[in-house]
Image 1: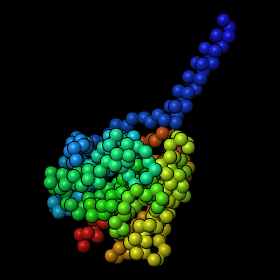
Image 2 (image 1 turned 90 degrees about the vertical axis):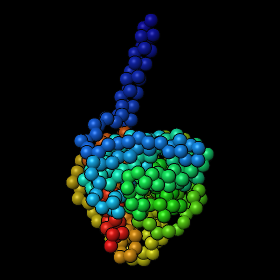
Image 3 (image 1 turned 120 degrees about the vertical axis):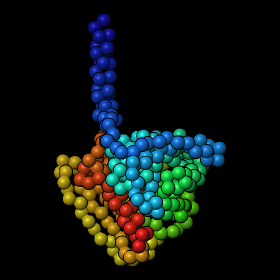
Image 4 (image 1 turned 135 degrees about the vertical axis):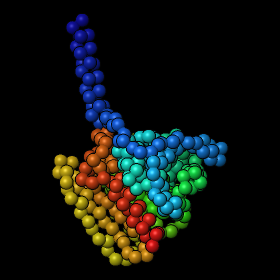
Length: 332
């Protein structure tokens, strides 16, 4: 009897400890969306017989000139959704859309994974070779036809697996997007590359953390849950940025910008490496020293197992400024 009580007590303690650890490492508080002017509309497209879902946020007022209406396509990470990437990005693009008059699209991946360029990835989207590039083309056509978006002002941003999909568009469909921004993702190595690059220069911004437990900043194997799930190998963040800089024809060294360490308590700081010259696409690598598999910014928390969140600046706002500079170049 006494032994049974000890066993029950031990089991109870284990359950409490497990629940506490799970809450610490996985739990993320739900935040309420900010006051927004526009509306979010859920829609469906048929792409080669497959139903593809997406949502579009349209602010109450677009820019005055139809020719300059832009659209940002925001791609969620693995096992994510459009609703989730809106939350974890702090509804940042929606707020910016209210202020600057552009449209935001949040497409849903097939079974919550994008068919990216990682050859070793074993999610069904890759195994079945789901045509996500065709999905993006159909989505862009709809944005142009129904939301008066300028086809030359389509921008794509993505987190993690969504970042890998953004790379795929930049590699294989550079005619479709004006610029790409990638967070927490490096380019696949050549032996892990399943895409056929068009080798066309495109403006690209990369935002990566040195303490990312999934996407190795210095290159190597992308793993989930320790060594049990592998996505194959990727290049380093530096090599990923250098690929685009070389494609754009840069020979000079990039210049550096250090962001003010305005939040000393986050345990990280950020710097930006930029290749820029008249007549050439801008390439940028934002390094979050001590940052994890997260989106820098003042907004929501991320699960602790994904690593630290830098609070010195908003990556979403930085990405929009990057896109906006490309719009200014196009308007010249």
